[in-house]
Length: 376
Image (cartoon, rainbow, N blue to C red; front, side, top):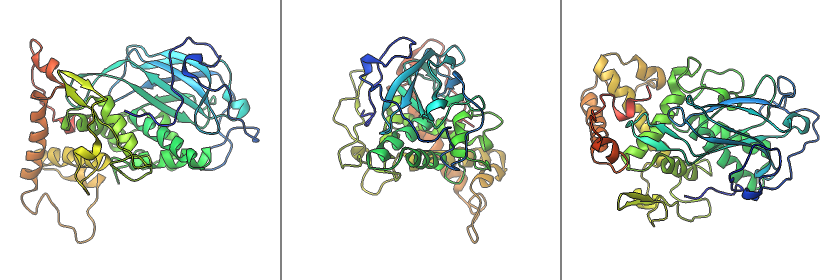
């Protein structure tokens, strides 16, 4: 898969020196502003200077044994000076002391993760984390806990693309963050009821927590996993495909320059990311692209659950009926249709390459929670 435009992030120790293995520039973002600001409001960021950071790496579940590195973000969106390194523990959490406080230069910071494993909520397979990212416009005493997910990765990648086209770093950030909040859930957006600036606040949101309104964040992450089940892809590939297909802000089967988005294929039991199989090969012209398909998975989740319970409130509180629209739960046939959708994707677990090791393991018991409902 292609990780666009960012300087590659190699291994290294926890020093404040530039990461020589990555080739990252030592040039840091500076600003004429004396203090960092919220890019949505242009108001001073809350809190004061700090070098203390805590956080978590969360794919669809806690990701263990992941290396987390913090970089000052250059004006062109690339990684600058390495200012911190940490490793996630058994709960996917980490603690980091930065080599310098980004507050003094009003610098954006990018956290980059590599490695580690987690159990997919969609099919209970052990998945390997490839690389995730999170960009924050500031680190302060009031805002220094960050949850790094595939959603923050998509936002970071879109920001870099936009900056490469001449958009400012602040505008690139807001356009990327605003896109991902509703990218999968539609009206059931992440932090939909946040009256502040959800495009910043979501960086600290724990998916599935009491602050995750209507479970929108956890559900979105699970649908990325469900996409991997649907097309028998490692979850890291599903994440990369989603990111590359959203760079322009509208779903696309190709990169912004028209080049192919490579998916890869299973070959002799191993997934080959270099295999010449593309996103365009998966989708015919005008077909629903990854984010749209993930949205469908989310609607299946709640439609299936509501049909089983006889209570359609969870569905319609997320996607309200419009004037004149028939209630699909009472207009006939919807429950049977959604049941068939869910059964079809559930059946893939027993035949997919990604779950072959799990299914063949001693004592394997098929899960009872639907693939598209595991995050609910």
